[in-house]
Every structure is written in structure tokens, then in C-alpha cells.
Length: 149
Image (cartoon, rainbow, N blue to C red; front, top):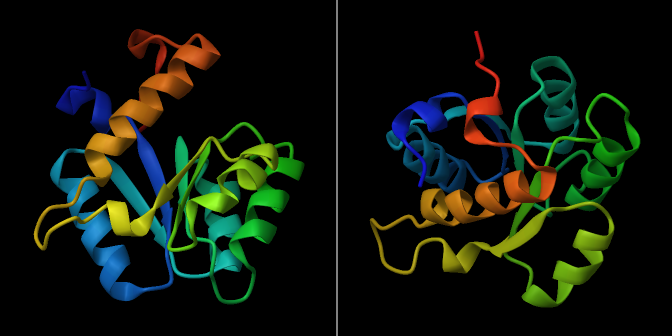
């Protein structure tokens, strides 16, 4: 189980072109203690990923300037960002999951599953499970997560 302290240590880059969805997800993540950086297009996402080195990237697939799949490809090809876990958040169907995982995404979440009812955002809870799985896979204990200054 994540504590508020654990979440405060995590810096998440949220890449979403829809202002409404971006604000909703950013608010839900802030509310539980994550530090959230935002980008509304693919080019900005790559710049922020290189400059700020987030712990996790939440990536939409349909973006202006550079598509989500292109951003994922570039992130995984760049030595400075290749190890940053990427979770795809998309309105595209689940059938794209396997292809994106093969291309380097850690997981795939359909956007329509995030807010089953108005006012309820399940993203923070879904991320807890995904982050725990990533940490287990990498052999990282919570005590090993670096502090951000």
C-alpha cells in the first residue's frame, strides 16, 4: 500500500491533449500526493521527460505534433529516458495493448475505465497496482525510491 510519503516521492508526467481530462487526472493525482508535470503534445512531452526525468509517464496515444506511439518509440530509443516506465492512457480499445507493450509500454489503461461515474477518478488506485508491479519487476523496494528535491 502506498503512503502519502511514498507518493510525494513520485514525479509523474501526464501527457494529455484534452484540457478537461488532463485537469481531472492531474487533480486526482495531486489529491493523493503525487507531483504531476503536464504536457499537452508529443514534442513538449519529450522535452519535459528529458529535462525533468519523471519517475513515470502517463501517455495518451492521440496527440498533436507527435503521436503517442512516436513519443513512446523516441522515449525508449533515447538512453536518458529509456528506463522511465510509460503507462498508456488511451480511448483506443484494449486490442492495442499487446503492440504497445511490445514497443515498451509498461501497461495500458482505457480512459473510459478511469471515471466510471462522474466525480470518481480511479487513476490513482490503478496506478498503485501498476507501480507496485513495476517495482517488483525491477526489484525496487519503497525504501530505495530516491527523494526528489
